[in-house]
Length: 171
Length: 171
DNA sequence: CGCGGTTAATCAAAGCTTTGATTACTACTC
DNA sequence: GAGTAGTAATCAAAGCTTTGATTAACCGCG
Image 1 (cartoon, chains in turn brown, blue, cyan, green):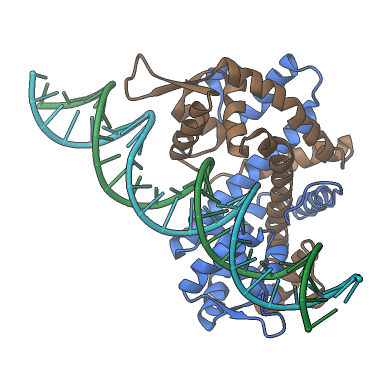
Image 2 (spheres, chains in turn brown, blue, green, red; image 1 turned 90 degrees about the vertical axis):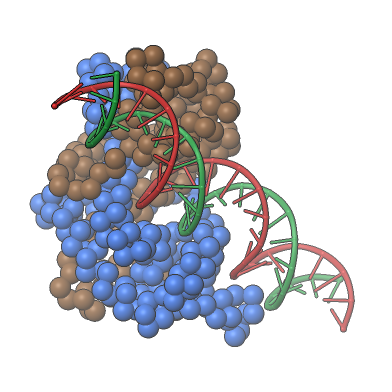
């Protein structure tokens, strides 16, 4: 396998091999795992975003925030950041767009006047309900690559990875 | 499990449950798979970026492009986009930053004067060699969560997912 | 009450990514 | 050889994310 014949996936094999030659101290299998994880996820996200969300005028982060509010109900911006895995600044910027578009409403919290309370507007509620079916169709397309048992195993192993302690988390 | 008690991970369970109630037609397990995949990867990337790359003044995409050139040698911008999984515009913008910082050099292609040929500078070569060990240390931290057999299984299942045909790819 | 420390949100600047348009060049076809 | 289609790269505008700074409000302690 020379550098000229590589494609997106065989690049991972080449990377592992070349790195092993040049830096004998590294762990090639750890490298392969992270590299593969990153590439697959990017591929899935790109597909979902470009097929499902951009045609509706949304970004993937926009969908995620709407989905968070749809699942867990109205909440403070800080909490939306925690649950969706975004930074508070990102939520703040995103809410700007989504409230401009009439999907999310933002009202000052009565108890704590520093905080803002986010909720879906009626339009946002309808939009997310309609979008989610299409989103899930696409999720099924991806999940359909694996057997039910393989899906369970994959989810279990990913969750185990995600339960890792002592790593840096968004704040 | 009420909405008030949720955290980043239990949100996935709540999302599956609430969606099942409200949209009976969807496939909850497909949803759980994609949701978990996305969250784990984001967590890993955030950790790697904030612990390894930002302290060195790099972004994760910057590292990825340098790494691509390090593994596969000098190449045209278009090819760097294919191998790294970025768009051509993203590579173009990123090369602006990296060449300004003296890590990548960009010379017009002799054969095809539309194209540019990218390569690591000496400084870029040294920087990526030095950074990669730290990067791999962190990969090992993550991979160490799983047994060797679990890692193999996870890589195999992710690769199977990534081999999915008929999805939208970056161009 | 008043001060100091903490917290919620936002602002600002820089960087990456996206879509869509433009420029420069190559390659094909008549 | 001239015209047309296709390709490589870049530009432009909009959006998201990041770090760091700022503003406004809460909270505890004296």
